[in-house]
Image (cartoon, rainbow, N blue to C red; front, side, top):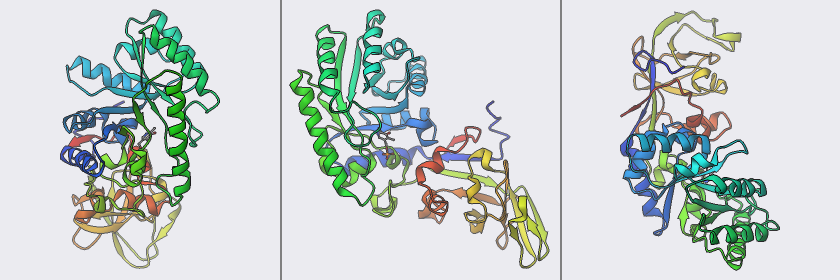
Length: 382
Ligand SMILES: *Cc1c(COP(=O)(O)O)cnc(C)c1O
């Protein structure tokens, strides 16, 4: 059940300006290739509808949504509200998906398994709309895409379907496994395999001009992986795919999300007092703590207990004791108390804790922090 946003004691403030700025920044960094703005998982937690429109305004050539179930909701809403969006590309669905509906909505689909190809053929028998598809090839990610051995057969089928006029093979695509690691060999090998796969498709009589391989890391650090189009996600939200290689600030990005709340209660505890479940924090001396109404049900990881910091009244404050389901306890800095503004994460450029700071303290990646922000936390425009 959606919450009453007005009454909810926290919000994720999303800067549309930052979203648009980041897309422009990516465009400056690449070399004229098309851009598919990736807005999967509710736009990495930032709200898919808002982000789709922002990236569309900033000139994205495509929108990419992993789950077809999400892509369909986006396409329906765009139609309902007569909002013109770039073409939507989607690559995850199972045999129960209604591809007819997807085609009717103009969604472009990935096909990378024999069953999906069969399903496409079946769908074409009763669909009134032709299909626009992108062939997925596995070049080393071992995730989506036809294996090299399957590709000639799949190409043959698609060439035949193209001749009926019911299918247009728009492109060929694959995904890099190691673009954000120090291993450059794997990426070069994947680029080579991708080129071979394209040759196989062409040899089979399928043109598939829109070749795409690189997500954020590949687009930034491997110019030769950019092909016709790049598929940045994390960069558009103002975060680096790997700050150890290049920080968001160095890339010139602005974080688009600030998670805000406020202190709803304060108390002074004596020395030796345990805090929150399990008393994993015990005060050494008398101290003031404050209650922040966000917990693991909101996507504040329980692993943040005792390690992550927030901003309270403009000053750094550590989470003390375990993060609870709906709230957590922070050590109050000088001058802070009830009603002090809390920033959980936001823009490190403004002294706010960054998403990657949170991630690194918990042994995860920035992606997981914004993506797991629960749907009950209202997203509001800056
Ligand atoms: C998630 C994803 C992207 C975007 O990845 P980022 O690292 O966020 O840029 C691009 N392509 C595919 C296939 C993906 O799954």
